[in-house]
Length: 256
Ligand SMILES: C[S@@+](CC[C@H](N)C(=O)[O-])C[C@H]1O[C@@H](n2cnc3c(N)ncnc32)[C@H](O)[C@@H]1O
Image (cartoon, rainbow, N blue to C red):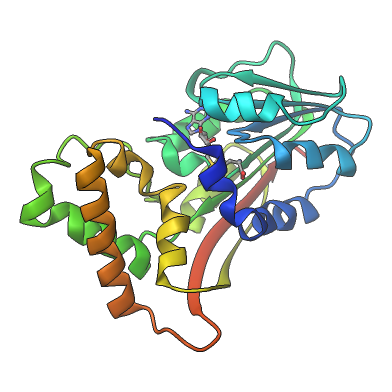
């Protein structure tokens, strides 16, 4: 799938907060860190402010994202590489694996997470955050459009529509059964955006991508306009803007 780093970065502050909230509860002194699904690399670089003595590697499948990541100013402690998380296999055991807002794009990611834990060092940790907003109006309205008669035929090839089918308990249970120590929590961020159109812009950076990739320019405009109408009818416009609640799940699992 083709990512657009500029579109994704439009809500950098709102999207960054969960990454920092996740790291607040990661302890230890990791020397080798991988950021899986690192995107444009800006947050990956931040890992060095927490652990200046570490070597950090950002991994992403998107050529556009890796190109953007390589363009940021960085020293030899940080590197980026294009690779698929589903067959990610580091040469050496890893002290810390971080993954922010990525696993929802990977079907059957529980088995991938299990495989990743086998690459942790003796004191290693995996820390991840996944959005859990598939029941939010912003997502339900997209689903209703996809299933509607006017779009169903054009969008039936849709495969990588992201979703989080798992509850927080399911992630935690799986990781506990692997013998790991687990901290898990969930949070709803109440973003305040300017207008329903800002929700469209937000979704164009992520959830809408696989949909828009299947449509020509005219159809994209039509889909976005129909989506915008639905959002405007659903999200209350206040004088300060619109509330855009966004639920996210957090898991940190450690060997010790
Ligand atoms: C929503 S972005 C998150 C980027 C970054 N972690 C952040 O928080 O800013 C999801 C990223 O996951 C990457 N991704 C999705 N599936 C992947 C896979 N199988 N292997 C590697 N990267 C993947 C995408 O290319 C995209 O850059």
